[in-house]
Amino acid sequence: MPKASATRVPRQNGPMGEDRQRRTAVVTGASSGIGAATARALAGDGFRVVCAARRSDRIAALAAEIDGVAVACDVTSDDDVAALAEAAGGKVAVLVNDAGGAFGADTVEQADLADWQAMWEVNVLGLVRVTRALLPALRATGEGLVVNLGSTAGRVAYPTGGGYTAAKHATRVVTETLRLELNGEPLRVTEIAPGMVRTEEFSLVRFGGDQASADAVYAGVDSPLAAADVAEAVRWVASLPRHVNVDELVIKPVAQAAQHQLHRGPIFD
Image (tube, rainbow, N blue to C red; front, side, top):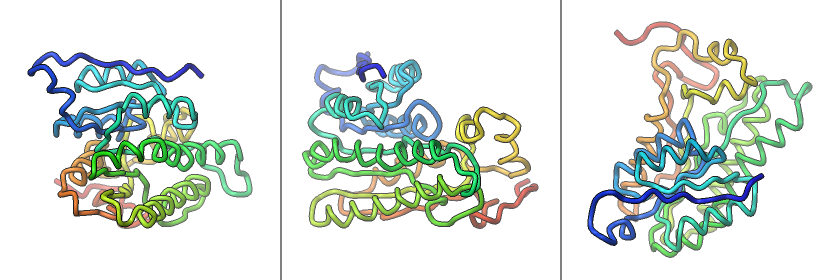
């Protein structure tokens, strides 16, 4: 894969040196969905946002929109992540590990192990790789925050979801372990675990581009979560005083009482 690269979008307004004074946030998976919405939300709160994802054209456009920095980065690549850490700089206030995804919906008996491995690589090892690389910069601020995007799938099992639920359970455990290991340092560690979120790509990717199958996931559901809803939760956590840690935050639409109980039909007028 091509070497990671950073694109700086010049600031158009403000005094010289203002950009260097802004706190830095790094968001992986920023090319679409929750990652892109989170980058916008944090930029709205004044952060210099480093937008990281594989699709360089998308993050370049996003960085131009929010006066951020675009870094082409595959979180499964050591070289790419090292380049991301370099582009982020010596001080990072917030790291949002959003890069992830679900691939396939097979039973355990029929599991495509390549899909399972890919989910483990991006959802778990990618998260660890990026966190490990940026911890020195998070420490340097004296009040760094790590936000890992988990899922309600990291709390319960469901048929045909074994590979994804296993990866998201691991995300939860890695988050808990990191918090224990960093106890005593001025660092906060949060997991945000959304339920059903309708984005333009998540289910489409899971079903290999099958639009009908992707649409069926949300059929009849009155107001599933949007990416902006989850991004607002990230923004809120990042806005709290440095002594306040939100261990975990589970967010679901009203229509979803539990992972296995989803109302399909009108709720709101």
